[in-house]
Image (cartoon, rainbow over all chains, first blue to last red; front, side, top):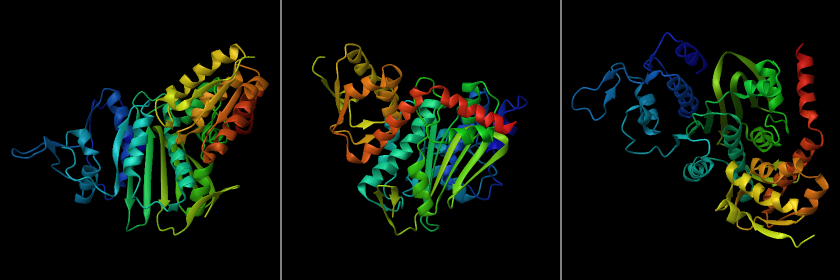
Length: 284
Length: 118
């Protein structure tokens, strides 16, 4: 995504035509950061098309791919509603395993609420007590709220997810096309930290860039859960990337920055534990 | 000091979800004028099914930046919050107090990172 953005954002290309025919695999949840990248390009007056030709007469869609992507990729992007944003008809049959691609205005926290309520159940999450489920949901809200309140994204936020029953995995992504955490930190404090140092600082509990308002990214419960569950959390923001997996935090810089922030949550759905709250935090 | 005023969060946010920034600001804006008259608030979360930290930071936490800590603690009584969200409330209160007690702490932590980078 970062390479795509870097290549497409130069002034040389007023029109950007994205050809997916050589893509061999595309995780559906990546539609969220993909949507953020395309929105950012469109905001820079670029004409984006995900198709490469007008459709032949008699076709139900107005555009089609002369060199189409793999059928499975086309089907994924069609059925989770992503292509409907690019002239494709809305999906006829919603994919029961997907959290559909959706773009939100930043103030639409309540719409995001309805989105989760409608699409998260039945997607393979491990068994949780009702209290734990509430706090798990709360963590997803905290991520959305963070995008909403701190990203300055005029282009909104993007969400998408996919349950892979055969691979025992649920992936959820939430992205924004805002200024990114590293730049936000540097601008707020008038410093020039490297992207990784800025992201590392921002992810510590209680740290915030908001003036006159306490805050911080509340990832503790999510990290505790992921550690037990064997999943993974990732944040790509500007020129920095963070991953929490198997109890280990890893940061690294991107050669090309992501134009905003994307949070990916990967849940192991082959997890027989029952998650509940304990005084010290998550227990299973 | 006059009798505390009962403020039902459900009525202010027009629903059962405390997830929205504008709603949190509205709650804050209902409380702040009462504090100026030294009037207390009983903030009832009766009927509320979701609360996020960011909401509490904006609704209550920012009061610690506008009034003395002792006054906020004395004048706000949180009631009827689902027990599962008590940790969220405690964390928001703890972070808010720490943030306003020492506003330079955040800047110092940034300077430390700067120093380590040089």
